[in-house]
Amino acid sequence: MSTTPHRIFGTSFASIHRLYVAKVERKGRTAAEVDEVVRWLTGHDEAGLAEAIADERDLETFFATAPSMNPNTALITGVICGIRVEEVEDPLMQRIRWMDKLVDEVARGKKMSSILRGSA
Image: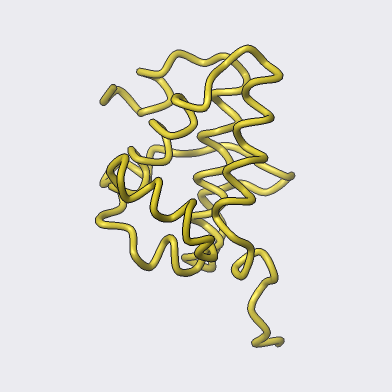
């Protein structure tokens, strides 16, 4: 079994954030909605999110410095990239997949109250 960390862990949050924003904007949604779901997931406030983007921190550091993961993350279920998010074993990869899933739901036009698992 390989102990090499997945290369996505070293990818900057800023680069992923740009891709998320481009994805949702193509579907008529906004960067503010991306930020809202990321803040809901990680507990980052607007300033913390802006700092994470500005300092180009990698995803591993982004999640390690997250103030508090949302207690409702267990309610995030479904498939992203062919993988059930609730079955991802690596905790960091699961957090990344949760974020992917939330942004995907924004892009698909789901209501924010549903995306935020009833806590909009």
